[in-house]
Length: 599
Image (cartoon, rainbow, N blue to C red):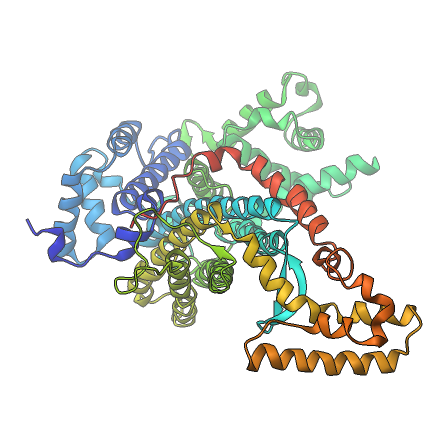
């Protein structure tokens, strides 16, 4: 057997991504999900057609398939599928045959009516949803860690920077609150994205569901029209009830009611009709159409009548009239989606795959999160250079092989490298979506096998690193204050000017004096490497004699006077945004793995 040291191993798996995310994108999880899909399809086909006399899938076949699927795919079966794929050059059919070998009775019905993307696309969506759930929790974990640092340092004034030049002060905590807030925006994006990441459903080779129509012969009422009539029935009845109108569109209501009843019959939801406010109108419409007044009293409940009505229309002299039709294969899809645990309906229309533009939404939002992490990590690196902030550093950690004193921000540097990788993957999704010819072309497959999992794995690793950094940030308050106080005299000049004017000075004269003193002080700092002596210069200028007592750190040079509402903004953000998320996702947060770097 080849040693793992003799072949390439992705650094994402070996160094960065969490075990949980690696499991979700693993071959075993993928192929177990495929098998769950085949089981859910078989169960749906059986349930919908079991009373027709010739079910598509028998109960015995379903049970045999379920036993194999629920035990999970074995290493031997994975190896066998790989062997079959080398022969067949088709991964899905390799697994169809592999599964069929384990289920000889169910084998004839596995993948019945399906195309490969009925399996692959739906499985991909399930994996994406699971991966997004993990990322959402990890983003929130990073938010919380940053917010905790923000609260503990909310009152520490620090020099602000615009254009990476000294600017109006903020506080250390307010800066980290800003980072946490920007991550909170990405939580909203993930929630919105979840509405777009929908299953493909069961649509066949080009999205028309032709194979399912062939399997279950039917009339030509389109499924979209069927859904429309369900809506019409409820809408018409609800409108009539609300306005106490007599139903004047009897033909329309009867037609709608017929479809509602069929739907409820096939889905074992007859009892639910009695809870529907429109049931009386639907019931009366059907009763009025099919029963004489003298026999209406025989049916004491809606369920009794519906059962009679449907049996009357399905069977005649013991012979099935085969009116399963559209409702049947619509119901097969609905049962399949429910059985797989999809919380959303399928795409309204698809080609052979779900619209590949969805992948651009996913990768673009992952790249957005990556960009936020990149900025936070870069800010920490910049402040580390100023000796104000340090990321965690292990007792035996080595910063440089040549320079023993080095304490490089390695974790933040790795975050920047991983997130840059994620941001650059987005173009793959745009290219793939743009080049899907007509109903589909297969050049999406090999690219998506790389771009989608690697984007999730890289971002997962970056989030773990950020959580680790944010949880162990070291704030060097003395250096923060030293750097701020070196610039504060310049930043305080406007306030000094205002106080001197209020003390009776000439605004224009005072402004010019401050300008000259500031330029000379700046020259000493930049050219001579000396300390900022602007305040001493102003104290020695008679024009500012009346405000000498204010040129102290207790008054005009108190940095807390220049941070505005930084403290209040930080506290309010944590209370109104961070804490509710902590409470809402408490269980998920507690279940997260440790975020300590693996290497």
